[in-house]
Image (cartoon, rainbow, N blue to C red; front, side, top):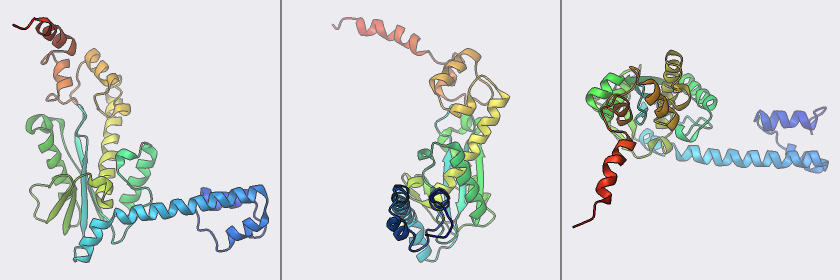
Length: 281
């Protein structure tokens, strides 16, 4: 065991901080025999197993990129959007060109990562390490004018066009980006299968979350910082009580109901119930 290092120091260095475990350390701890030393051995082995599993996951998430790199495409941009489902706020897209063979521990489908601080750390790492990255958005007004799907495509095109380098190839979550000249491939659930798309998704998600936190400060009482514009029961209750703000999407049913343009669920039930009760002829 390294001289003058306590078990606590070793745990902090090699388990908590995740530093590379020196060759022979596990054997020395096993020979030590103390319960604390053996507990540290178990923790180190668990960490090594986790590292192997994470390495396999990351290799799997580079399968599309590896195929394209082998074909000579070097600047591969992953593209994804965030904010299709909410009834408030813009739709935002992210595009990222990762370095050849790049792997970022923990980078995954942003919907699987519930801790906002972790998402922010991953987005910061992508911005730091990417060959190029950019975000694009489509406003609430555009969403209401051209519909949410078309607005999402506009946001993705703007993200691609915002890159400081022109990509050779696009990997896109589910769709294809219109109005750009480079070849591309849409991948269903791409943010869980391509590290480049996951990087673009992380940029889109964290950027949009920041916009909704700012909107929460501008319009307190709606809970935008919590639900990020999604139609949660709390959001719908605030919408009915306080009415829509300019950031609410007028083309979405919950906002239409708050504006009195669609019947409420209670009104629908009142109309439909007599019809259901009417005896058949």
